[in-house]
Length: 268
Image 1 (cartoon, helix red, strand yellow):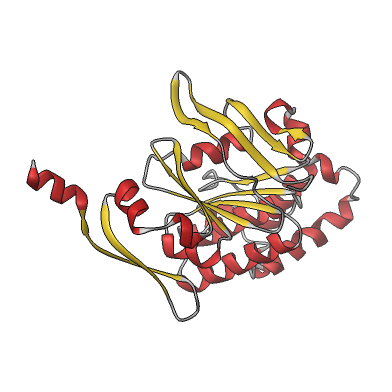
Image 2 (spheres, rainbow, N blue to C red):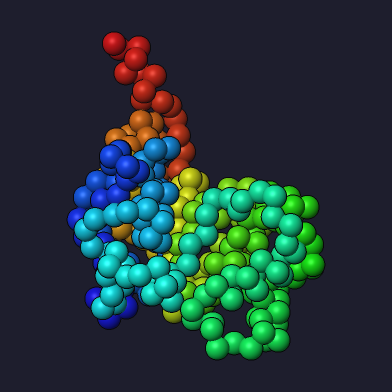
C-alpha cells in the first residue's frame, strides 16, 4: 500500500435512521486504477459514493493517504475529492463555461488562479471531453447526455486526487460511452484514484482494474473483473443464470441465460 491509496474500513452510511451501506471494508484502492462499484438497484453503490464525498453522514474509516475523509472539513475534503452526481440540477441559466468557472472559484485548491486564467483552464477540460463547442451554451438547453458530460467536466476542472463518478455513462450513446471511459482511464493514469458506479457489467469488466460487487449495502465480491464477476456471484447477487468467459481481447463476455428469481417463484 502506498501513502496515497484509499482505504475503506468498517464504513457505514445511510439517511436519517435508515442504514444503507453496512460495515464495508475493502482492499486498498490504488492510484492509477479505476475501481467500479456494481450491483443491483438498491445495493448501496451511490450511497457509498456520496458518503465518501462527504454529502451524507458516515461512520468507520475512509483514509486517503494520511487523511481520514470522514474527519475532514468540507473545505479540506474539497482539496482532495471531486464528486460527479448522476444528474445536475435543472433550471440552471449559466453557460457551460460559467458553471466550470464557478466550480473553480468555489474550490480551495484553485484560490490562487487569476480570474483571467480560469476560462482557459475550463476550456482545456471541455476540450479533453470533446465538448469545447458547447462552452457558451446555456445549461438549460443541453441534452441529457451533454449535461452528463458537463457534470464530468465540473468534477475534472478541480484536478482532484480522488474522483468519484456516479453513473457517468448512463445517458450516453455507445461512442460517447467509449470516449468518456477512455478519458477516465487517462485520468487514472495521470495519478488519480477513480471510483465509478456502473450498471453495465460489460463496461465495468472492460475498463475497471478492480470491481467491487455490492448487494443489500454490503460488499459481496471484489478483485480483478475476472475474479469479482463470476457465475456464482451473478447468481447470488443478481439472481440470474449466467455464463462468463474471456473474449478474444481478454475482456469478459457475460451472457445471461435466465432468471433464477423466476425459477424460485415457480418452485414455490
